[in-house]
Structures are given as C-alpha cells and as structure tokens.
Amino acid sequence: MAELQRCRTAAGTARPAWKVLRVLGNLLQLPDFDYQSSEQVRDELRAAVEAAPPLQHAGDFAGQDPAGVEILIDVPMYQVDALLRRSPALQATNTALAGAVEYGS
Image (cartoon, rainbow, N blue to C red; front, side, top):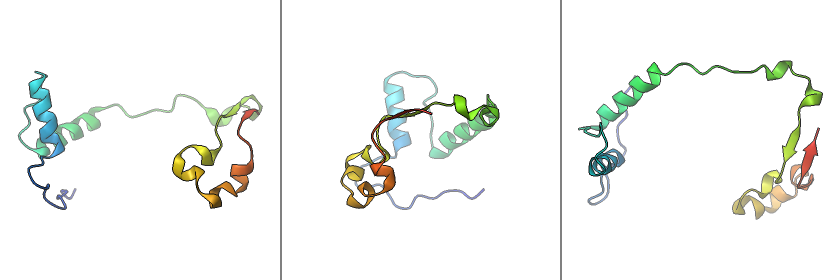
C-alpha cells in the first residue's frame, strides 16, 4: 500500500493533531500516549482494525413482509439545514412538496 504524504507543512507553530492529542493524553496521565510518530499511530490503528471481528448483518430485512414496515418521516428531506431550506430549486421539487409528516405504511 502506498504511504500517504502530507500535502503541505502546518502554518506557523501549529502541530499535527496526533501530537496535540499525545500531549493532552500525557497531561491527563492516560496510558499508551507515548507515540513518537504518526506512523506509530497509523500502525496501531491498522492493527486494531484488522483484529476487529467482521461486521455481520443481524437480521433478514429483505425476507420480512413489507406491510409490517412502518415509515416514519418527521422532517421533509430539504428542510434539515439552513442551506437546503434556502434553495428555491430544491423547494420546488416533488420531494419537498410531499409534506412534512408521514407516519404509517
């Protein structure tokens, strides 16, 4: 796997995030915050991810009766944040005009 290279040097006296977190961990006297490089952080994270058990799907949603599935929609799709609410093009779509609340199947 190709190694990642930083795209530019931090401005001024800024420190990389992993160094800031290392210092905070040491100040709080937390164990295992003695990293000397970002590669050590990466390697430990990679090992933890590889050691984690694979995710398994717990259910069989596709085999269920669709009549028993309940649809809950509290907020229209294009009303969730300020940018979307102010978009005339999105507000003119059928999805935006469908209504604010839809409960039931």
